[in-house]
Length: 285
Image 1 (cartoon, rainbow, N blue to C red):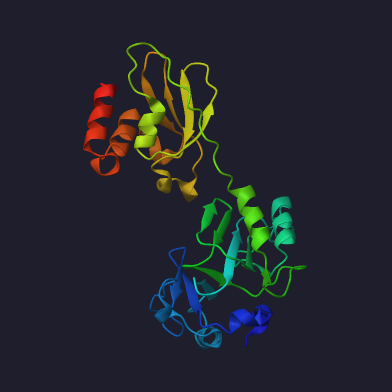
Image 2: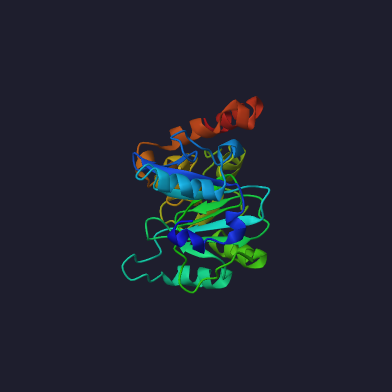
């Protein structure tokens, strides 16, 4: 075995859930050990034993940047990825990252960039949770491993179901239910904005105070996947007292989009049905 890879817990090393990886156009690409064929975090046929991946990295210097562990539905492990939380020169963590590491108290190592932390815990989790800076994965994902164990962290993977659940509640709070108060604008304003958004599947986060519009709501942008790192903040819809509707998203990818684009996006027949779409269009006319 090679150097600091010995720090990786033996229970992980015993599993045949390992891949090699390399940078291609600044992107980490998974590779089948000993080859340049692509591996996939969802295809067990492309995974190899730990020792085989380590040996491939040694045998072909420069071909790979490292090795990685794949999370699956069949194993009990969950990965917690914290980005941009560590000073690579001093090793100091951000206060929040230090709190998370202390709470989970399980095997943690420094990411390949030196600026992030990756943690392994045992927990039951059915889905992934992601936002800029914090990503939590139970399966169909891999972690590029370094063996650079975080000073003070546990050398073993610990059961942390309750601790992980508490972390998810804090980092991914449920959005508050919007107020159901009826729209009381001018007689010519026929569209109930909340009904329109709900019919189109737009997630409303909260109502915002505004001095010019009658109603303003913070929503999840339907084009949030185009935002840098999937950021879901900075998107609003509103309705003036005269019934006029508007849409504004602060992200550069959406700078050209207005209410007409949003309406076109959320009214497709496969989402709200022909009759619903016709009724809403008549009310918006």
